Image (tube, rainbow, N blue to C red; front, top):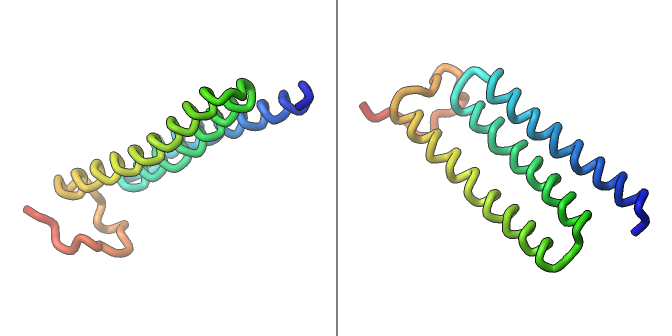
Length: 112
């Protein structure tokens, strides 16, 4: 791969990752309730991390680096949604969720 093409790919991946992480940060600050903040914190953060780690793999293309990048992305993609789900359930159970903005309340009645 030519150096110019590698630089362009690297710049696109880093800028994409930075924009996604910025979007996650702005969403956490601007969204009104816990559930939408959790959504803003997990989705763009994962995609931003994927872009940044893909840039690392492009710039240092070895078996060890690619394996580490795949492990980072897989574990982060598995743990971030689970953690967000646990936080959202805790927020729901402690009455920190705005029920008036929910379209469907699948949990039904709240425990008291």
